[in-house]
Length: 265
Image (cartoon, rainbow, N blue to C red):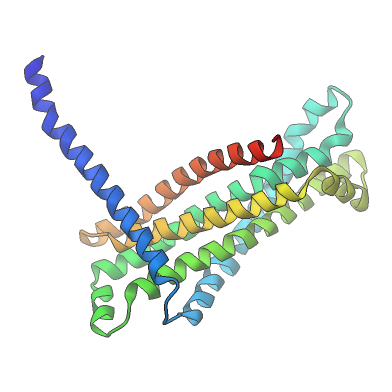
């Protein structure tokens, strides 16, 4: 038994070394972002282009997803409320669920899959084809042009997409409620806004900023550090999605605890 333990020690040690080395590299990468973002040159045109790519090109998928989420969640909630004769609470319930949690979370997960993988693959392909090295030779700061611009764009656009998703999901919910309970549009939205508070909207936007930053910085980090040719590009895209989603769920959990502490303080 002692021989097995001795035999396993080097393997465990290597894994721990690899984990902490990767953690240190990620910390230095994030630290470099905050150092680079404040100093010129400012790549405004590239930031705007990335905002267009991330925001506008995501609208069809976000629209469809948000609309379906509103309808499905309303249908799933109705049977439980109808048992207590409380279907009139549907607009309030839907608004709380969508604005507090589902809107930011669904949007971030969709963006992690679409935007995060795209960023990881794009930068990864530039890395393995030595385009980043060519940019350095040409006296262009590749970190600022590639990483800073994309991270700023995701940080800015995800909150906007979240607001849009909330609106589309509420429209989908209204259509469902109107067909079944014959509730008018004005009555529905009066109940929606009565159920939410400034803290709900503010916390949702703050979470969205954090989610957007996470998607951008993880995608850039995985792409910027990819290797092993085209295989490395695929791994970078896949790792960007998996790691972004994992961190988003952790951040959602932490945000929930903080907001609840503030709400019930």
